[in-house]
Length: 282
Image (cartoon, rainbow, N blue to C red; front, side, top):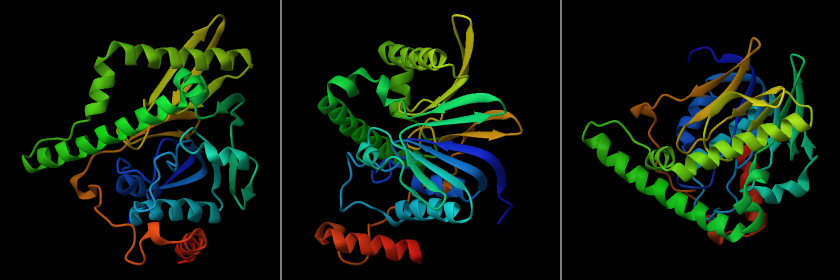
């Protein structure tokens, strides 16, 4: 195995573990290729909104185990809560070893104040029509499932993969306007608080740009997602860069069942907890 890349800070968001759209195999391959000093998980890591007890593939558990393993090897891991894992917000401040759950995070990096949080606070639909947001999440997951089927057919024909949802968002004016408004709102709030940079997720759109707010230039960064873009933010040697995973046939999504043992939907909570403990200790 080649040497792991040593990185000061890695930011991941919108993994949506527990859904069929999650590209867990590629994600695990990426995680195994790096050695971060700090790993910031910026929301929607485990998709509790759409979590189904009978769908938790081994590849998803391997991602969780690897992240816990990084924390055990002295990597600082911050789990910032998002809207799909908002039930964890009540545990903000919980710490076990090098892993900590927070709702937001403020870090000074090379003299500049960086504000990390998921970004759903800017979503009007999230604030006023949560049922509509949940319905949209189900529709999005269905589109990702269709996309997986389409790409499987394209691979058989020797054609490269495509992202249907990304094409839709890139070509629909209202979606583009929403993204632009999100970025402007985030930068404006950061400027009012006296911060130099804001780092979000939520909208599944990796980005790095400077946004001028009155007399301030705010760095806006978005880590994207591991559904469509397979992206991350990396900070090394005084510079932020966007990492984009190269789509390789060797790392196609695995078709796995949740477990060879008793089905998860037949287990009691105590049995599920014991199973997870066994996974982490193995």
